[in-house]
Image (tube, rainbow, N blue to C red):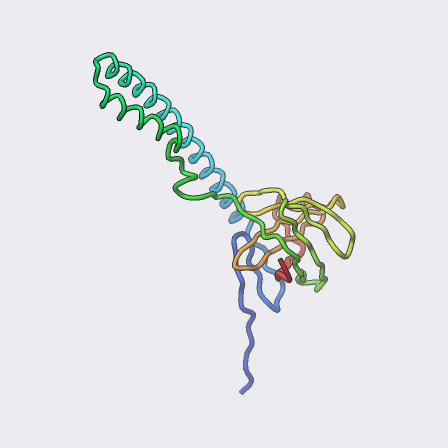
Length: 198
């Protein structure tokens, strides 16, 4: 009996490709939904943080009034308690969602990455620096990672664009040529990159 081999899909963030098969482009609706959802989360988080900061300012003003009243009444122990709470508020600040949930923005992984594109099989070597700068060994090109939701965009000034997503110890590159194709999510090539050294 002849064994039937099927390509195993690898999915991460906005990328889904089939190893050993032609790259599968993520649906435009899926990408748009993810971008919109990420924006809504960021907007909601910003609104919450603004509101809680305003509440903290109002709370501090109220504590200042209580401190003044307790001091005038000669209740020094009570005044000290109020002052300590004010100091704690000033030191810690209000409980923002960034503190509670951690950052939602993506993070790049610095190091040297080996890329192999599908379906054309081309290879490249990128060095990603801690400041987000990227150099391409083969073409002596340089670019900078720019945040784009849970991914990044990368341009080398050649009229092309790549969307980069880091997940599961790998980096996934979606190649758009020309870069205007990114607006309609028309991916030309997809590369799965392995970290060679940090």
